[in-house]
Length: 335
Image (cartoon, rainbow, N blue to C red; front, side, top):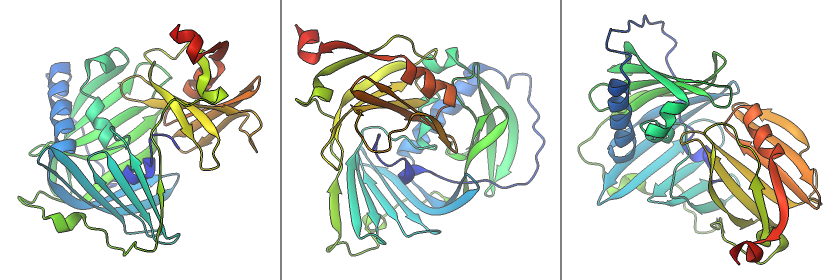
């Protein structure tokens, strides 16, 4: 699994009412956009809010109840699915507990960075993204009985998606976010109800289910091991513009197989490469698409590479085709 539970933060949908966007003369100012996005990033992480969100992808609509607070320098969040199979996610700092009642399973993961559609707003204020995205204010719109500012983020090439965001004018919390590629909306997230209470009690983050007899699975952090996959050295000969290697390490799969993970990012979008033995069952060869998520797989000698991410297919294909094994080991590189 990569970066643990993208599902836990897949958040919501939007009203279908039409609106007229009127951009003012100063609306296109990047400094103005930067201030809005910086405030939105802060609101996502440190705001106290609770509400109902809808999330639409692949023609499937999920509704979730969310409660979030930031207290004593600790970010806490609880998501409860209101549609589909019962599930609940409780996050405190980097610790994420996912409860799956139908399977009587509790999955515990640790992630320093969230990688949900909503939390991605936190990356939009970085200076680095300006080299690959154009940003523009598009005027005002009302959503969930709140006045919002509309912002468009347009990629400058084919290697990343675009976004349209509606930000609450009073609290700066993003209330709606569209993920867009070639003018098509791939995913939609929206608050249908939102409130900003002065106080959220500890009880709001307690699990609904009695999990005493549930199976607990701990998802381990990446670490360097002693297997051939762990010891082998991989590098890229070419990456999509703006993408860089951000993290690398080794995980063990539930079956005990070591898999090297390499995380690539342009500061906003991310893609992960997984490198394991070539004798895995049903290996992915070529590309596949599931909504906004694309994957590409290929065999390299005794290894198999799969690159997956919420990025265009051309991005995962380029990364996969330009990952090479240079024959050295980690020990050789460290000499």
